[in-house]
Length: 262
Image 1 (tube, rainbow, N blue to C red):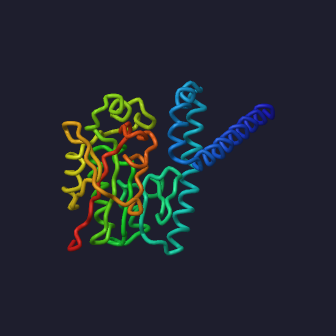
Image 2 (tube, one colour):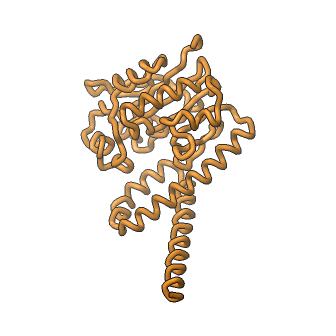
Image 3 (cartoon, one colour):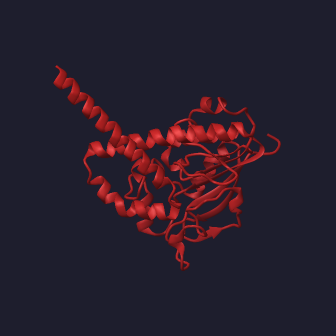
């Protein structure tokens, strides 16, 4: 009996040590600049999927635990410090100067009761969501839009970026489509174009301004926007894959503003 017990303890301790190591690896990974991190993921993804399923699951569990624990502490610390209520959702461990980072484990867009635990209605200045809405079903996207509308102050805005379903490059669309081959695309539930995404936020009561998008004919449109009002890294100007003028990777970007009279 003692032998079985000791063997169980050793296996348990080994698993804890492995998960602790993975958590440290992920913490370091999140410190890498986003453009380098994206390229790193593209290179290592085939090797990662070649690992035993148990190793992959352990990594994902460790990643989620680390992100939730560290992110929640940082989130609560920033709120206590009285930082301006400019919230980034779905940050995956990243942070932006002047913004409060959050993640799905403690601030889920489709669970407004979580938001009510931190914020009063009509209290937020701005919300930023880069490549979040494509991970929600259509109905979840509608709930998320209503959640943002409820907690934004009149005149406040939501800046959203998603993969662009009208991008003319078939390789791009294959990368980002539902079930696509790109990193994270296995969890994509929607591929929006400017009409469908704009309509979703208009229906929620927002006034929508399109910032970057392809139209149905494959022509690219861009309006001037200030990254200080919400940095979108996967954009025409800031994604390093677009160097040289060729638009290899862009996003459909819009501002959805709550009317000042609301």
